[in-house]
Each structure stands twice: as C-alpha cells, then as structure tokens.
Length: 332
Image (cartoon, rainbow, N blue to C red; front, side, top):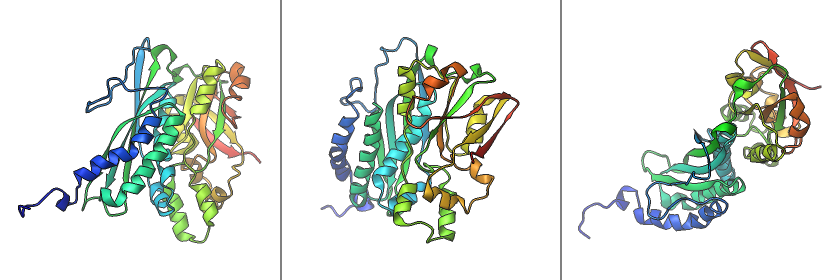
C-alpha cells in the first residue's frame, strides 16, 4: 500500500457497486420479456425503438414515495416501497393513454455494503410491478454518499417514459357536460398524505395493530389493468385521473376547466384507514387522501356499461356539470 487514500476509504466502494449489478440482473431481465431495449450492450443511456408507432408522442413523469418510505423501512416492507415507486410513476403515464415503456430509478444511500440486501429487495419489488405492465427497468443510479445520506436511509426517486400514438392520446379538452365519472378503488392511502398519517400515529402510538399497519402500507395499486381492459372493450375515455396528493378535488380540477361535479363515493371499507381518519379534519381528509378512490375514468354516457367491466371494482361516482368545483360526499 502506498499510504495514500483510496475511494473505498472515503466510503465509496466501486468494486462492491459492480458486484451489486449482478445481484439485480435477474430482476432486470424479468422486465425485458414483452419489450426489449435497442442496441443495449455497452451504451451509457437506454435506447428504445419507436418504429412500431406511426406518430409517436413521448410522455414522461417522475415521482417518489415520500414520507411513507420511513414507515415501510421500519416495518421491513422493502419490496412494497419498490412497488410504490413504480406505480406512482407508471400510473401518471397511463393517464395519457400511453404505454409505459421505460423506468429508471435513483437510489441514494450511505453505504452499499450496508444497504446491498435492502436495495436488492427494493429493485425486486420494482420489477414485480414493471413485469406486470410490460415496462422495462432501463437503468438507474445507486449513489453512495457517506456523510450526506444518513445511515439506514434510502433516498428514492423514479422516472418513467412512455409513448402514445398522437391520434390516441387522451384529450380532456373534449369533455362535455353529462360525461360520467367512474371511480376505481385504492388499496390504501397509497403514497400520499403520509406526513399527516405519521402525525396521527405519533399522537396515537397504539392506534393500529401490526396487521392493520401492514394493510395501511399496501402498495399503490397499478391501474394498468383498467387501461388495458378499456382498450380491449373499445372504450375511448375522455380523461383519466390518478388520484394522488390533493385528493379527488385537486386532481380532477386540474383538467376540468369550467366544468365540475358533485361526487358520491362508496364508504371506504378499510378498517385501518378509517381508524386514522377518525383523527383527521372532516373536510381536510378529502383534500389530502384518495379516500378509497385511486383512479377515475371519465367516459361518454353510452360507454358506461362497458367501462364498468374494465378492471375490478369500478363504480359510477358522478357526472360532469357546468360550473367549476368538485364536491365529495360519502354514500350512506
């Protein structure tokens, strides 16, 4: 040894990083069955051949898991965090009518040696969801940042790329009064509103049993099944909405223009979620959580019967009216 410092002594092990790539290679290959990268070997960026599209329009999105990740890691639900990361991005791509093609992740850690097992599990969870919607894990960045990222923490961000034929892109400007809103159930709070959930749990530490906590931490539902079924049923939706932060009002109002709706949603039969909601302001809850509706399809009245067959659990929750504003009530 020369006595001079090495990169490993500063906390970054490039050899460990190269070895980690082999750990996750089998998971990555699972996402390259229906679709494959173009001339992938040796490139420093991922390439995808769009020649099968006539007039391709690229659609992109980026998102994370937010403060939900802290509790997921505490509960050792690592794979679920990976699923959340994918769904929060891919669902946004699906709202355009596009196909999710590529996904990339960014993971910031303090030490790869310490976190290798957990981030391998994280990637496995990502690939479970990516495989199910034919989206390729095209690449990513695992950054060792000792002294910047605290030990035990994993910073996460996801990036998704999709494509849609220009003629088939969802166009909410075509919405009309009388169009029908169909809501699809969420599996929990998904990855939004967890700063408030954490505040409730800090105030009421014995509120939930372990099983109830696990049910509350269910990963964000991937609504690829709804979109795929819509296509198979020949239903052309007026619009799609992924219900994330801001709840139903904010996520619908972003594209409704001068139209609004008075929504009636089913009672959310989720015992753990209802326990948390008992400590949340009666009005604020609708502007923070999805309240059991994680996805909305807006269709013409003539398409309602067919659209209700798309994906499990769809129900009519309202119609469009003239005049801005979304109100939400829970069915008695």
